[in-house]
Length: 217
Image 1 (cartoon, rainbow, N blue to C red):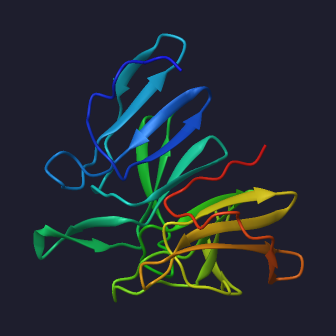
Image 2: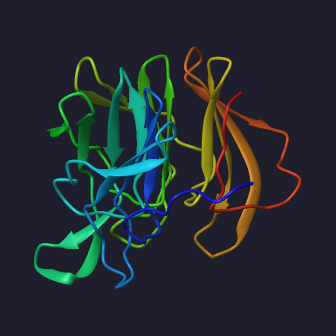
Image 3: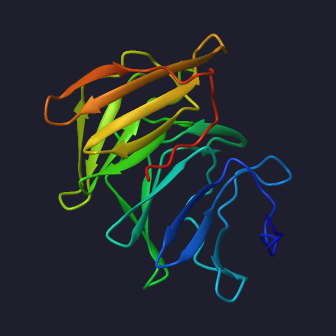
């Protein structure tokens, strides 16, 4: 490991995505524990950060995925319009075009949520689980088609959860671990088959995990 230049903005609960060899750090909670709208791009070749167009609405605990060279930022927590000192779950989806350095709002998720997971499978974005406005966790699976700008609700997870990880592997969506509503962590792994429109249980993760990440190789 070696240290690299620090982000211009200190934050956590952010999202990150890579397009054309550039890494984008998006939103998050700043040092005052407020959602921020900052978006910063890191170029590994020049080893330098650049400020780019900010999020239209500050948010944290969101996800970011890439389809067709554009970054889709989904859900999360945003300031409450009635009380900016409070954060509420949002169904908002915004798309960043690195070539134009601009944002566009697209169709909202059917379910407002935060601390969920999102993965791309066959050009569509599959969003699982997360925390709700009701302070409960959801088992919802919803898929977004960027070409049609539409959402479809699919078969629910077997277990409601948040703070989990997901990845697309060999044409299927795998969901790993997470946190249950009682605060406990789970080692449950579920696999969704788009062809069968159903979930199956896979081998458990060796240890219960949450706030983890998954990468398909």
